[in-house]
Image (tube, rainbow, N blue to C red):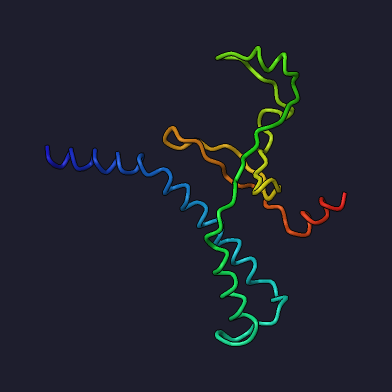
Length: 144
């Protein structure tokens, strides 16, 4: 009987640890991306640790790590009149401009930085990033 209980506990651990499994999938994907990056030649000069501009830039980078930013995941947008807004009640449906299944926008301090899809693990919602906006794309969008 003790052996049967221990296998039940092990099966419960596996199902309760879905977030860890999802994170492991991400680690595997990141490792594959890192291998692909190693195959390409380096574009920048490699400075030795503790000297030159790299050491001071790392110290500068440490200064901003604890600055809070506002992360927003946007499902879609719509414009409605105040009359319609005041008529909303529990269970009302507001139509958005985004279609079901479209990627959601991820904004940091109001600036689009990525797109992603909704994931549900153990009855909790999350977002899996599917596309990161490069800095050059962000600058290009600011100019238009």
